[in-house]
Image (spheres, rainbow, N blue to C red):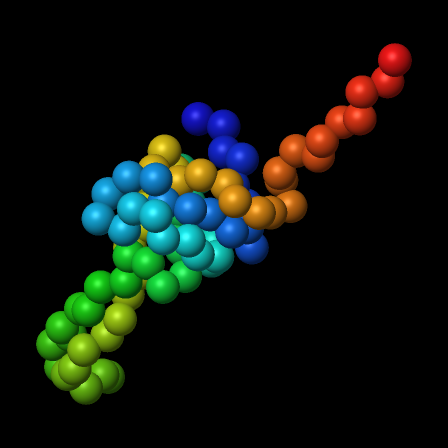
Amino acid sequence: MKQHIKTGDTVKIITGSHKGKTGKVLKVAPAENKVFVEGIGSRTRHMKATQFQKAGKKDIHTGIHISNLRLEKGKTQPKNKEKTS
């Protein structure tokens, strides 16, 4: 699947529970067809204590499938061509 969304672009979510929200793209995972959007899709993970790390909560980002997004503003947005007569 060809992807027109790049890191740093502004996207709008068109389906799902976050429909209508916009955000900046933090990371793109082309192998999984997922995009990580700032402030959207973050989950709380409860971590068990290990030898090297304390127990507690950790915020993680979950990706949104690229088909659920629309490009709002970005580097890859096509420029309007002027008509020449």
